[in-house]
Image (cartoon, rainbow over all chains, first blue to last red):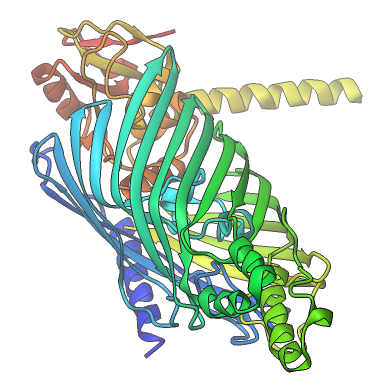
Length: 418
Length: 143
């Protein structure tokens, strides 16, 4: 069953190549724009990691990947997306995008990435309602479209800060020109339920609002965003319900670390300069969770040089924990003997969460080759070093895994759009 | 010896220069002769064709029109005005299409079709080899 979706990606790739090599039909005969536009994108990838006691993957929302589970994993980077855009009137349009990729439960069930209706009041002002992309980072909107990105995948250190790409709600976008500078201001409000891997339930974001600002001047782009919402992680409840049995000291710990509608904030800034022959880009982001998932920050710099259809590139990324990665927990010495065991278990549970905060640095080098006009091929090598006593961004950690080490990842992908 | 090499390099540069001039005829941005647009900056032209601007600087709506994919005029235009190769332009639109934020310019098959369209629509802006421009079109002065 698991291989069927990959066959589908391969089939889509064949269609993409066929459409690229066939002569494009003359379009002058159809002066009226079509109402429905069908388009798609995909990546067929293979990824290998040298760390065999844990899995490397592209998103913390995936249950496994390359290393322990697979010698070479196709699930890390492979994806297929199809999209239908309906342009009903010059003002009213709708978009539905369905994406097939490895899910939290290891299935490849199709998921609705976005589905929204847009009303373009003026060429500068539009409002959307439905499932909408969250413009968190520079490439968040199209992070799954490998063809539109320079790398095999956006740096996991930074894009993993907020692994969620969409929200159900409304947004408004306003574009303004001052001289040759284009400003785009976007405000959104919504909610989101994200299913987490490994029986850890659902992450619920409520009252999620955010603003994003983009300035473009010729080859330069500047982006800043701020998001703010109430985050609930039901899977934490049994642990912190346990702490609450231990009087004021336990309640204080539970209140500090639980995730019941806790305020979660994100701030990010990024810049890109792409005059054509070469590009450089850099981003920084920070999250503040008011819970056991901690406060984190991350940044990367990346650049590449285009030699005809061949683009070698590099990136350097790092993520760190800005909050404590351990806690003494309940004071066991003050407890009657029959409570020492349960209290120690709770302390261990809390420290397992805190100690899981990723601290990691990765240097990546790779190359993109534009094969035909809508297909590219990429190879990438990553050298990752874990912070002392941290599992980094690895998932599916096995007994015997050594924290604080380093590992290498080798990836090859074919990206296409049609 | 070194002097001889210097001349050799200069001669090579001249030959390469002539070669690239011959292989790439100049492509100019054009609007209808009835349009009020006379001059734009390179960035303004690029913004209109890359979907960043939907109006001319005077506030009038701008309707960019592409020539056929793979045509010399199209490749030359994006290379000159936006510094982008066909793959880079494709990747640019992939970013916009797959977030539902817009769609690429309408396409015409060739320069003759472009002239017909510009004659009908004063909002349209296209590009053509300078030698093909005639009195029905206005070549946009690039500042």
